[in-house]
Image 1 (cartoon, rainbow, N blue to C red):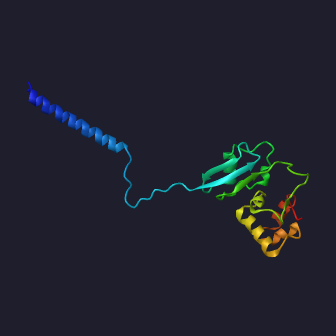
Image 2: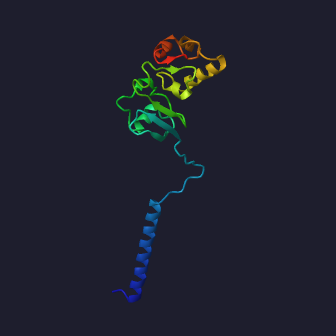
Length: 174
């Protein structure tokens, strides 16, 4: 049949072919080169500090464009006594923001947020107040001086009579 020399040559050819096929398969399963000019983009993230009436308070990293509701959910959800109606759950999160989930009846009876000392973050906890509107309230206060009454909120761009009425029971002027 085949001589010893022919079998040796045939064996070398078969081993070479198998090695080549295995190399091609291995290379095809490995990382592929990036086409020239293609950019790899890492998903942008924001860090937020979720505190208050949530199951697991802490710092969380969420995709850019996430909402307050996403942060509360990531922190294990709101506790039973959370006053979620005081939060704007649809507000877009900003990097470095603190999300405070308040409790119902927290503080003295009838405790309200003081418009003359509230921070942007505290104002964002009010229903219907997002980051931009909260900043406009603080800017107005800095430019015009302390609020004389809750009704003066209507002077802030973006706040109308309906919003003032919605906030009246939640804010005060000290």
